[in-house]
Image (tube, rainbow, N blue to C red; front, side, top):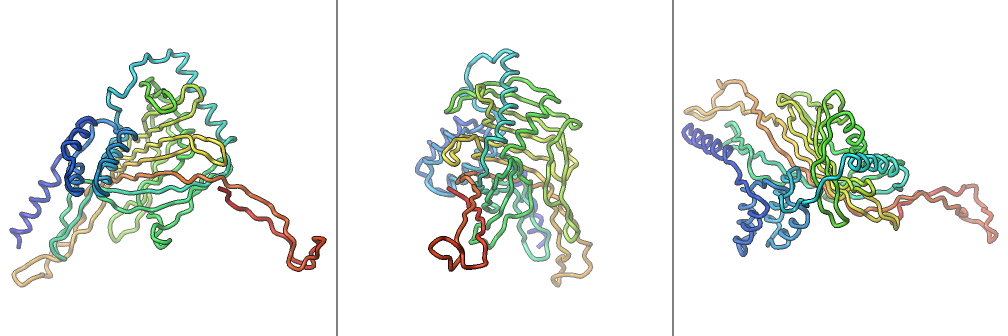
Length: 400
């Protein structure tokens, strides 16, 4: 039995040390073309063993996704694309256009600040659906009820769960109402990075803080609506206003608590040079390696959406990637010649790292209006005068 356990642990070490195959977007497309006609699960395995070295843009992702035969391979491709969301685009996709001069760059940034202030007053009260799919790369299995678990880090990402929220935007602030994915029986899990501020507050923090840190021109990017100007920024800790909130930290059988930090951060912001609208925002925190969570990244993509017959720039997708320590309790029992013995060493705590990807899509935008209707109470006469003492009540209803 001990020999079997040793071989299993050795096998686990080999698996945990396996590195994913690096590939460019062009190499990914070539690999999928070569594998055309293979089974869905085989393609999922192929994609699960890859890691992109470039960002896969939404248009190429949609084209590749349509060519895949089933849900397993499509999910594997989605995770592969999500993991690349913080990388640079392939060189061929970046326009060879001269950067704007310093005065024009300042003008673009000024327009972004003005647009954010104006959006608070222009955006109506609305609600939207947020659908989140979560994935992680930690695999834990048990050989027996009394042996320590076999922990495999850095495995191909596997689905963890999914849930839907209704996001309300009222008077310039967002509020979240959670609904379950199984007829309301399962609520949104509380663990993981708290994703907040995608409807404007994150933009305001970045646009405000970039003037306190370093800012430089990066490149132009192409969108369907036209080119956008991409800037790189870096904010030191003493100037940062970005709050990282992660639930939950602690050891098994001990009280758990939230981890919160206001760390330094850096990233990119893509701005429409004419209107100042932000179309892409990237925040990468510079957490300490000694922190229980030492990686927290968020990317938000914005697009024009119709709300109440008018177009507004709103979130369409967000991706968060976190890496955190996940304590796992070892077992008390151990094996002797007669089975489980009672003279085992105290249980110990394994502390592997777990990387999680949250893929959130925002849709079903609807304006939220308050209407006051004066209704006659029951028993009113033909002249509209009520014969009841009950007053009419105002009603507030969402309007599509």
